Image (cartoon, rainbow, N blue to C red; front, side, top):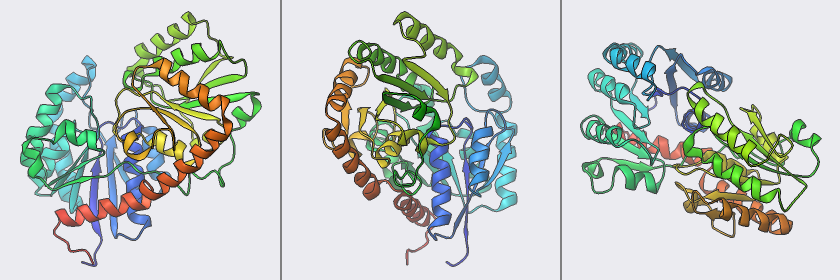
Length: 389
């Protein structure tokens, strides 16, 4: 088949985070590495400015539609319910008009995209990428995927265990593909440093995260409170977008910082950054504190930048990081364990350098965007019954 395959990748969330980063990277990779596949990304109009900008900057075709994410917020949930059928019709109309060959639903909550694809008669690939979804959403997702999905992609073995193992979905065509990292962009030889971090003296310990309860930032703060009692040359940075829906959690973190006697001299919230490679380039140690994750791209990016990483044991971290060799892996919700491993790296800079070198090699061999794009392309062809040549 010589003609181009048209894929519609639907994301009802829109707020830029790990899944949106993955969608952007995969779409870019499919075009960049000659797979003759063009992705059209659909996302909601609300809270999606950064996502739209990322897509546009990379030349990825996209549409912002008036679709609503599933949310616990009463106002948004009410809108989701009353607009459920009209939004299915909206997506159906787009799918039919653009004559897509395949629709991809990104996340277990993407019910409308799945239903619209079925009515449009277009094969659906459902990407599952979490381990901490509400039981009701998980059940609905599995029931719909059984009848609507032509194939399923999971972003790690633990996601497979959570959704697929010992269920009817085991009979579906399946692929495990970790979220990728662009090692040509996340390259310590190419990246410049962060001007803000360069102005600060001493050693910098950083994280790149979202501000929500699953990211475990309270354990990062608790770790900070332990380390500043032992070292007087450390500054901690949190690069994270803050959304209106997470204001309550953010206030809780602010209170914790105050209660721990910490100030902006110790810990700084930087918001969402445009140049993550530069930020990581200027860091000494990267810490990841999530309590639930599938394939944490921020960890892969820090590894690609040759940074020593201390990460919680979530998602595919243990599949791609060798504990004690290419990074340190600790249990979730354990600030003392985070502190212990960071101390080892502070006291042994040469160990951190060796870990960083091994980490970049591991990412290049297993997680580069070119590898992920090839896996996605092969799976799409399998679903569409297109032979590999």
